[in-house]
Length: 163
Image 1: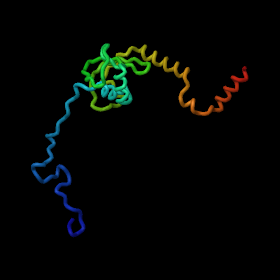
Image 2: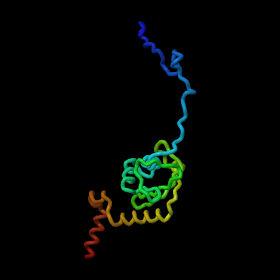
Image 3: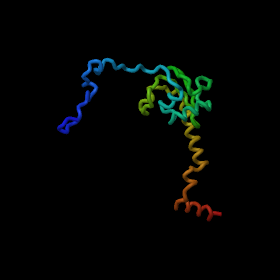
Image 4: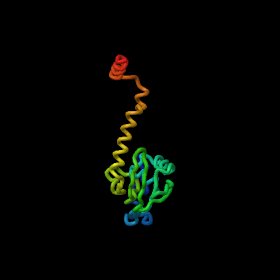
């Protein structure tokens, strides 16, 4: 600090203000990263939002729910452009073709740029029906932990009055 109470002088405040010619900031040195040509299966499944977490994608691979052709794949297997994956996610059986590799997890509007959905529409309908059936048969966990509402109590009374 100088005697007048001012701030201490730095050798350089910003990278482009460096005094030493050897340390000069050069924009031309920065390089643009090349696009990915391969990516691990678990990372790709997570990045294109087929699974919510990478852990779930890894578990699906370990359980043989992800296949290339008819062969199960390990999470560390590298995907290539044009690979066709068969994925079982709950009641839904997906078939997708790899068309690109995102470097990071991307937003839902951009997902379709990285794979082609080859899943027949019947698979989506079957999965939706199975989900609805399961909802009718098994109560939601929240419903088991809470007290009945007034509406529920009225329905229960009506059931007992019929008997």
